[in-house]
Amino acid sequence: MRFRPHRAGLFLLLLSISAVAGAQQPASPLELTLRTDRPEALYAPNEPAEFLIQVRQGGTRLASGSVSVELSNDGFKPVGPARSIPLDDQGRASLSSTLPDPGFLQCRVTVKSGEKSVSGLVAAGFSPEKIVPAAKLPGDFDSFWNNAKGELAGIPLDAKLTPVERPNEPDISSYKINLANVNQSRVYGWLSVPKKRGAHPAVLVVPGAGVYAQGPATQYARLGALTLSISVHDLDVDLPAAAYAEANAGALKGYPHQGKTDRDKFYYRRVVLGCVRALDYLTSRPDWDSQHLAVVGSSQGGALSLITGGVDRRVTAICANVPAMCDHTGYTLGRVSGWPQLGEQGNAAQKDAVTRTSAYYDAVNFARGFRGPALVGVGFIDRTCPPTSVYAAYNVLRGPKEIVTSPLMGHAVDPRFTRRQEAFLQEHWAH
Image (cartoon, rainbow, N blue to C red; front, side, top):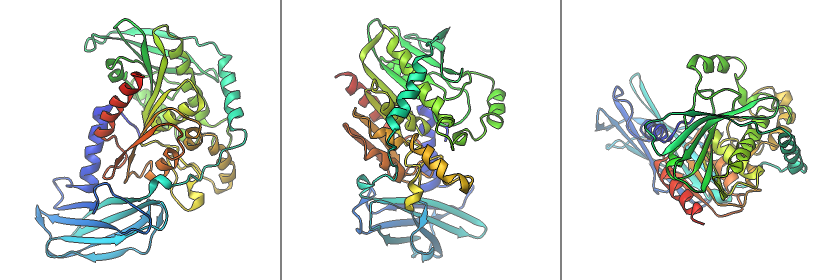
């Protein structure tokens, strides 16, 4: 679920489209193309959606054979039995189906030829703007996080900056930075400061999941913003690859699930407070414009954008692409939950404790409290952060909001979202 800057995101999108909805690898003689009868892939409940299938072999339409089709509620529960559908003499097939309630109907198609097999996904959304989250807001949600922030406030900022020369960015001053956090830990990251004199808006960039080296997010500094991009781990951002591999196999192995039976020991408590600490630093700078403070990220970073916006009223705008950690308890209603599927994995005896903890770390519950402008991105065939869970969070946002829908995208960054995000931030800074 790791996300890199925009170029990597573009690569992921192209890979997703080619692997799921378009041509396969050159070595495969089979090509499978899937789409819905509406480009936007959006329908009303009980309205039929038609899934259109095209199979080619060696560049030529397959003139005989069949495909296997499985329908599900956003990849979670089957909708009817699997079936085989014959191809016509043009290598085409279609299937019409619907959902009675708001949600996403996912269609998995598999075609075989000899020993070769190709599978792909396509999905249709049924009034997703009416999806109601399973997440419940604990009565002491605000007091829990206010107490946590109070603990953080008692720790001096202790900002340590190291200038770093970046000749390819002559208009930006770059620094490695680390800040004091709870549990005697540090927040590590990169600070990018426009050299142009004056007050600047600020952007906090939060990362996708994983344990890896990170570089500065200078694209926002080039737009004129103070930019702080941080790691979620108590590790410096530019260690040798072996150091991250060792941490990933050791102390940080399975970190998204560490401490999940106790809200005070869950891994993300320190992560969320690290985001607040990053805001403490940005808002302390004399070159901040004292008005505009955005948080942006994809996947895990999308979750942390929603979470930080909800936990800290200093945040004035958020951009959350394919956000994780949305609707952790979706499975209790018989539907999919967002990454990392806290309650669906692990010891069944722990589920009650995990459910209690997850409510304090569900991006849905933070989204409920954010009233500023929000931009969200969603992929209709995303199997990591499924669209049902993304809409569960999007639908409870209270301020001005918009969503960039990508019907043929899995877990990736749509270039359309990247372009809209840049314009969205500039529009926000202009007010």
